[in-house]
Image 1 (cartoon, rainbow, N blue to C red):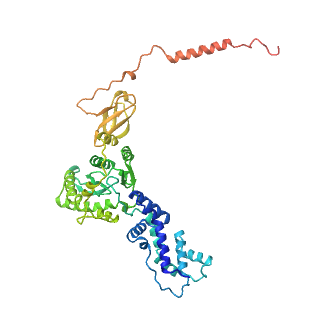
Image 2: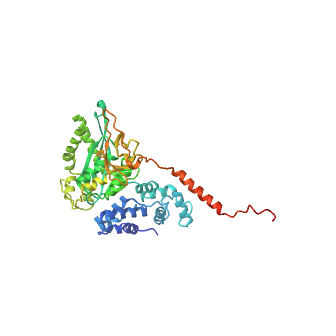
Image 3: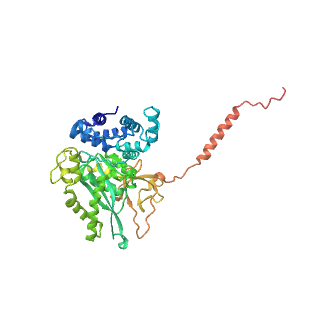
Length: 464
């Protein structure tokens, strides 16, 4: 007997409610709810977006909001009377193993005795599975959605997560003889408020530029819980990981080849494109000028402008939004989460670089194509140098047993410098004897004494 329409809708609504029931717990914070939603979606092989749709439907209309739309009441006379029951069973088979083909599903139904062989046609089953949302293409999309980072998310408070990335900037005539040099914009955007904590143009797209931008952001806004970045070479250095670890900041990686996972940054980069078009019209020639106008542009045309993403977030959680919208600066300032600042020394230590160098016979070390003087007592030793990337000319040399000191760049003067004096501990001493011969004589005498004490059998003849 076929299911009545209301019956299958009730069952479908119940199945959907069972999926989202754990997510309806009001005691869950947004981060925990997001992780739980992801786990439920993975276990049941459906998309995060589908779960969100179910949640929203339930909050708006209760249990009735979870009921699917009416199926077509008319049924082909060529289909068996129990086709709706068969379709439910075929959907169940598809849910159990999404990779099952239509041919396999039909074979299972026939082997279980639910339908006579040849009654179910492949094209008919494919069409009905598609209408129910379980076609091969739809299931593939669901599975791929679990591997992608296109799902929307937003942290509930500022400085819970910062997103960072580089963007190509304009080329400026700041190279040798006016050669054009490529610039790169590094930015740190607050995930919750969309507020730009720090953003600056650099002439290099490397780890030191990331560290400089991050350091300035932390000095401005204090500690953040985590930073979201991709797997590009500027973001995967051991030094950067170490600096973040020392500050207690977690590093989160975007999935490989998943640009959508950084949607807020990509949207923000559209604002950057607008600025760079204006910068070309302005005829900006220097890096300082490029950054100065960028700061002005950010303050006037981004930080204080309402952002649709903020409005969308609050509407999604059922909170009212002012008609004029909310700007990143407003959202940043009205957040109740307090900012936690580090002392300057802690930040300096976290971003200090440490490397090993071998002291040559001239008591010097090499660093960035320059020579630095150390101490003659360290000739041939491997020492540790530490430096702040913002002032790389100041090197601190450390070696076990001596007080750390600053190495000075070697100055090439009019005359050659004096050969450094050899430390007293390394100077040769004139010997009074040969310790090798003395030791050999001692061993030789010990062997002679041993031979004298031994019993001699020379006086005994053979056969006596």
